[in-house]
Length: 112
Image (cartoon, rainbow, N blue to C red; front, side, top):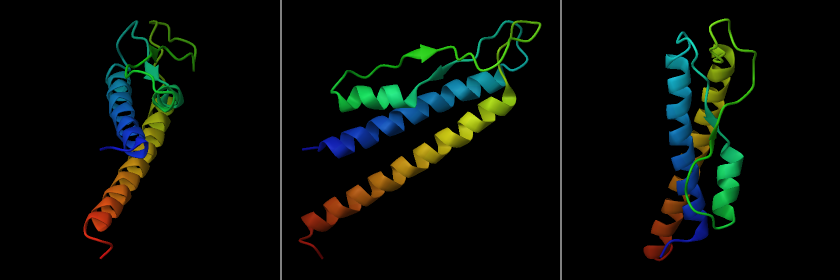
């Protein structure tokens, strides 16, 4: 049986993996005319799982900068900062999950 902590950690990993794909797509389309940058709110997705909500991603178009002349809204500096932030969250979640699994393993072995 899985506890709520593990479910939250799994959701954190799912959201960060999905967000990484969105951010990579934004960076790949930085020179595509008319491309609109996309993102997902990590906090909103985490709040959803904390409230027992269903999985699903609310993708939105952030208004971080004015569009270029060609209508593209990707700002590489902002996207790279988001990638760094997302990577930190992912790494923290994986570390917490490994600690939780180690603790469960110790419990199963009788504390040894």
